[in-house]
Structure formats: C-alpha cells, structure tokens
Amino acid sequence: MSASPEPRPVWIFGYGSLVWRPAFPFAQKAPGYVVGWARRFWQGSTDHRGVPGAPGRVVTLVPEAGARCWGMAYLVEPDRAADVLGALDHREKGGYARHRQTVFRPDGTALDEALLYVATPDNPNYLGAAVIEDLVRQVRASHGPSGPNVEYVLELARALRAMGADDPHVFELASLLG
Ligand code: BEZ
Image 1 (cartoon, rainbow, N blue to C red):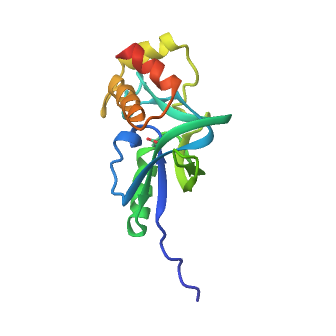
Image 2 (cartoon, rainbow, N blue to C red):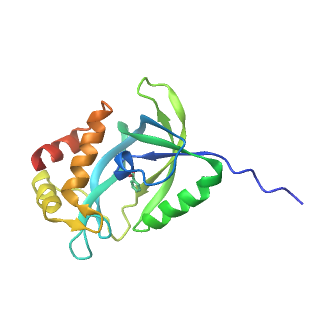
Image 3 (cartoon, protein in one colour):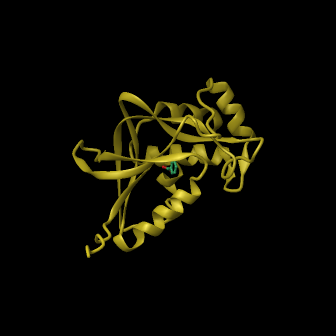
C-alpha cells in the first residue's frame, strides 16, 4: 500500500481583490510579478461587484508576450492548503481556471511557483475588451454583495501603488473614477 503524499505548502498569487483582501490565513506574503500575462478588466462579476443582469467588471489575466502583472503572493501552510484552495475554487466558480506560474520578486529573482486564477474567455461571465469610457460607465454603475465596483478598482490601484508596481490599465481607470 502506498502512503498518501505529505501535504505541502502552496503559494497563491493574487492580482485582483486578493492583493488587498486575501480573506484566507497565510504564513507569509511577498509582492512580485508574473511574466507573460496582462491584467484586464474583462471579466464580468455577477456575484461580488455586480448582480445578474447588471454585471460589474473585475480583472482577469490575458496572455501577452513580455507583459508583467504585479500582485501579491501568499504562502499557505500545508494543513490549510486544501481548505483555502477549496474556498477559492468555490468563490471563483464563475469561470476561472487555475494556472501555475513562477512569481518573481521586485528585484527580478524567482520567488517560487504559485497558483493563480484566470477567467477563461468561454466562461458565461466573460465580457472581454471595452473602450475606457465604457469601462468607466459600467464600473460606476455597478454594485454587488461585496460592495461598489468603484471601490474594487480604487483599492486595487492603491495597493499596487503601495508596492511600487506599474499598471497603466488599472491606473488609467482608477484616475478616471477617482
Ligand atoms: C485575485 O484576486 O487575484 C483573483 C482571485 C480569484 C480569481 C481571480 C483573481
């Protein structure tokens, strides 16, 4: 009989609300970035920052050669990993797939591999690209069980600025909403 594998600690990389509100227990956190992904407000939210029929806009990642997406990596202890991942899978049941990516520290050295959630274009809440004026209109108009969509954008921009990260897409939207 083979022994079941030892539970292992897991890094989770947050690039959306997890950047400023992780909502799970963690042992360590580290700012950093992943490569080859760009953050975009292309996912509709009908359960957090909007409602069915009037979705808000939240971020997902889209593949883009050479792009960097800054966020926060969290190390979850082995005995908590299954529960945390189960809760995130449930919370993000609206169409996100898990990926594994190397996270780099701000100085460019590799931190570790981490799991992150990416909304797939075929999910029912996916909205895709929009001109900035439409993003502003939709975010201003949207509210959901987790609060106003504007708060989501401004909190994300604030947290990214605090870590010295650059993200023109987030900062442009935040400055038009602020
Ligand atoms: C995040 O905050 O990084 C996030 C979490 C779940 C799905 C998408 C993004």
